[in-house]
Length: 365
Image 1 (cartoon, rainbow, N blue to C red):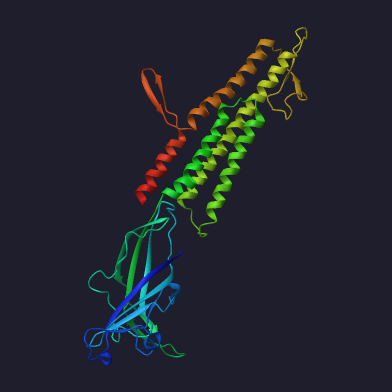
Image 2: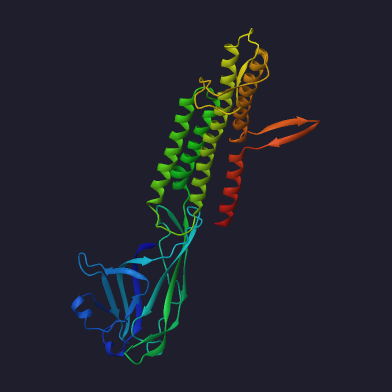
């Protein structure tokens, strides 16, 4: 919520007491002489810290013409407060202000105005690593304030105020490389779980949890560089949706694993089936914590071995169907289905989210 600016401040005013008979301008660059000359009491109203440069000598110059017109220039470095709106971060634009105002003199005593021609000048070749300077404009912020306060009285007067407006546009390149592309790839890596054998429980669980922890760690690293704000930013929505996709992979495998456990139960029961048994004991529909433990049985109507095999194949195919649907629904793979001559276009959920996200925030810039 602050930025540093290094600037050259130029001021000009007329002081009849400084007129002289020399030709041209009279140069003053001695700090001791400068301290004996009246200077406008301007200060930067929204600066947190400010200092003049004095290496190797005080960085200033003052020229005085024969009529007493003074041209004073000095180098100043400021740390200026800037209230950032980070709702669209990192696809945002910011407007930062620099306010210059007299500390003691009201407008009738000292009126401060911008130069008529190019009051704010800057080198367009000077750039920032994260921002692009869109424009630097000038304006006025004159206002009425109380001054000379005492315990029982005060004065109210209008002060002249100069306003410098800096328009900044954040460069997206850094965040594309450091945030968006890596997190998008992490989500894509989590989809590899759909192609791993649905019976390989450790492999699929390890992949999902690894991608989830990696995404969480990367998101925490980004938050350390930002000021704490009470609203959600654009990058928070991106990380949140990426987290939901990986969490959805975990839920998908939980469903697949549930079907596979039921398929394994019926398959093992079919292998232990006794044809000569007058009454077959079959497992209930309630899943057991142990796939090989048949502790919860109840007498039921006789089921033949082919029926048990059919049930095992039914749940196994449902697990495979969930994986196959996820392979198409999660990523951005597009397919065409032909039903009664009509073609239906199915677009991946992640591609839809990217389209909505980038369309909204790029238009909001």
